Image (tube, protein in one colour):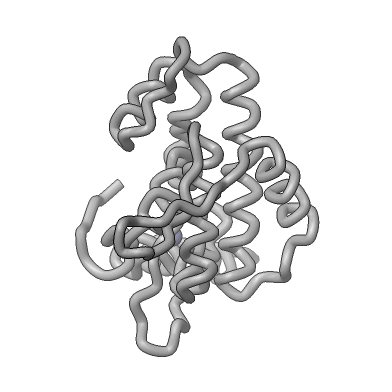
Length: 186
Ligand SMILES: [Zn+2]
């Protein structure tokens, strides 16, 4: 895959970045899943400054994180123009009951949402973005072979694709191939 720092592949700002990184632990296109394996999961946690207090992530941590990740992906699909996903919302609510997020005030009285542990940290980041209005700009690419989480920087929030240079060219190749098949068929 070509990497690029341009346009929509650039990271989301503020707390949304954690949500974006979390959703992108699965690279649909490449079939790479950082949560699927204890070691890569632990390495990812460390990278995010979320190292677990206990031992390395167990099967239940992996299952819960994967469930939350896919629920968030469904919510980001809705941000990209898809249907709202009530099941995903319910799952987030259930997880939030198990991984509570709390309000923490700074010395200046400014409030921040915080949570201990991976799930709560991700939920706190998503909740903050939902309240500050930046959430609708975090989307997943509408290409089902991609589904990469990207931050839509377009002025009117109309972006549907993670990056035209990467994803758009793939769309073109597929369209070209199907046209070719069309013309070659007897
Ligand atoms: Zn894409």
